[in-house]
Image (cartoon, rainbow, N blue to C red; front, side, top):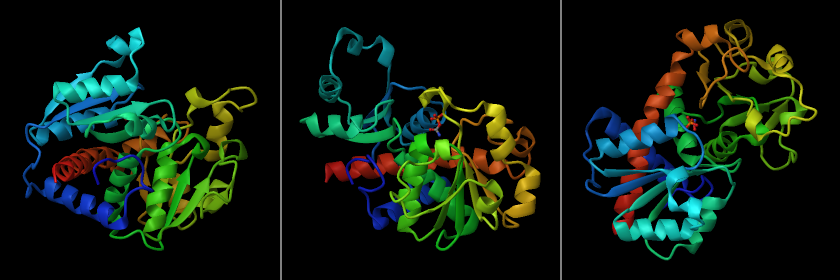
Length: 303
Ligand code: CP
């Protein structure tokens, strides 16, 4: 495992190795194998959690960090991403984390680059967000022990969600019972693409659910023509304390990859209570999971 591009490309064993390594980093029982390696964070799209947690992960691993300033780089003069990354490699960069609005661009540029730099997908368009799925899995295992046969319901804008796709891919490998809930205009067009159960009604979708993962409505990726306003979405799909209490499993875990739109897809009251705290723990676990990702790919690329 020298790169992390999507979940489909890694095995169950590789996933579990990352999870176990993340656990050791969280417990403080494992030292960095990749100190003095250099990481470049190349974020062409906004980010808080992914960018900051990769940066903190690299700091904890005693790596050097280059915060690549995309808007002020020579890309604005027409330099290609391939040329940029090959130059960074010759400057001494060992790995890049890239976030980009174009689906598939990271896989594409990785195939063009001739030098052994490690690639990590920090989220590309509506395609994949593998480090998010890994940290979500880590958090689920920490909270409920196993996902096998557990009902995991993802509620929200699944059609535009790289997080949903990466989670479906990962959770399917581990035998979870996956349910997706969204209005028809935010569902996947091809219902045969994934082996999941589709719902329009939120109450049936979360009934008995062990995990409810809420997603943001990604207004920035919509052609807004014909979309209902957010008050209509809120009326039908907002997750709040009462809904979880009435329909979900007693010890349901609430998750959200962030950023959350308070009082649209999830109530502000729920976010701020004890159940909502898991979402912050999820973000915190991102640091340890990303330490495990960086340590693994950089160590294996040496071998
Ligand atoms: N979950 C996630 O990718 O958040 P950011 O956009 O803040 O990185």
